[in-house]
Length: 357
Image (cartoon, rainbow, N blue to C red; front, side, top):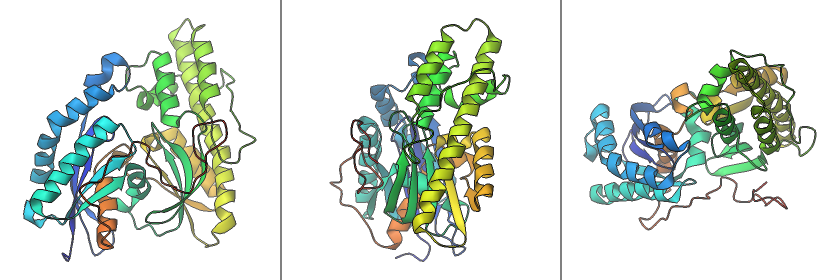
């Protein structure tokens, strides 16, 4: 095994084609040698959302070019790469297959180990790319497809404390932005819209706020937004609704995170408690401030990935690959993509809803 392993990571779970090379370092924080990301905003803009077939076609067209660019930027010869890591799920099956097959082909041609990576585990470990982070820690994963609180107890060892029983938070942002006429991808732009409005103009629902532990629900909030947008007649009212939505989300996360802290504390007794917030929505400044506030009140240290590592990227996939490489946890080349891959394999289904708890 190389003294300082170099891992090439590949991410194609949705609409980002990404390749990254990272190298292990004696400091305990890997060095990102390259992290190239190609988004597909223009491809899906006219449809107001990601079209799986178009996304897969774009991945096929770009993956080789993105890989070559990442290798060029890293200044690493391919014979120095220790292993190939590629996202195996969850995500869009037609998109996952592109990156997975490309990674298998690379691993086979270079005769090096292949590692299939859980996309969610990539987010969970992403702060390790810029800070020392020991297990266990509490994770809030908030992205376009996922919203859940997990106790991260070790590599491959996760206990889910709470999840959304309907929409993911990123999806709620995207759908609200669309209703307000914000151009796709609207979720990340909604916060700027909100800065022009009055956050107290509209009283919006906070579903299951006082029940369900630290589980989340955003469908009722989305329905309320839809009802109000039908009556809106001015840009200022749109700004006010965006601001009210942003404030409502911040309030929900404040209350639910406090409950997640209580759950985490039941079985984690260490003095220094760490709270990691990852996923695309973790880039939202208002949410960051609110979560830091509740963390400070409850003696948790809040850790966010670098902004460029909040969204989907291949460096986080390589990070998981590096951790698995160190313990020789490799996969065979017949590994299949799993669009519904979960972090907590022991999670049980919630009655009446198609999600696990």
